[in-house]
Image (cartoon, rainbow, N blue to C red):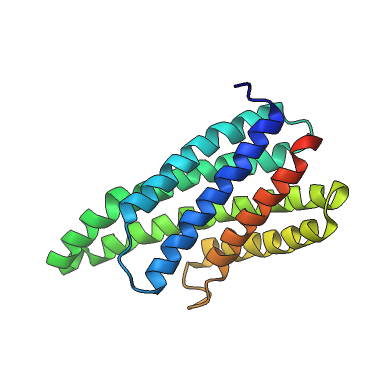
Length: 199
């Protein structure tokens, strides 16, 4: 199979949809207080983002017009691998020790805070990519999709930036940063499907 730029961009869009789907499934199960298969979901995300980093990096070096967008996707993918890696390898041990030794609770909380900091940074970058490809979609494709992607991508960029700077509790119970980040990811993927032929 030949990985042309068009094919690479379509694969990137598909991987972003899969990543958003895993996050939506995790959130639904968590909110419903059902058993969450963290290893399966986060492990799958780790695989998706690892592959995404390679394809987005390949698209980046071959891109004529959208280098910033592909750079943001590549960096976001790498950060997401770090984030799910922290969740899978460190949450369990730290919280187990904190359950037995209360003095370790701040250390467990710090690991969670670090994970969310990386999460917000990745979502910021996906919001930035959504701005790039939303603008491209407005210029040469569906103006409605382009405008919506610009709006949601901008909110995701700002909301996750605020969470990164001020802490993940800054919006209280409102899932503004994470929610807009996931929605921006989906809209970004749709824009990529439309812009693949233009780069």
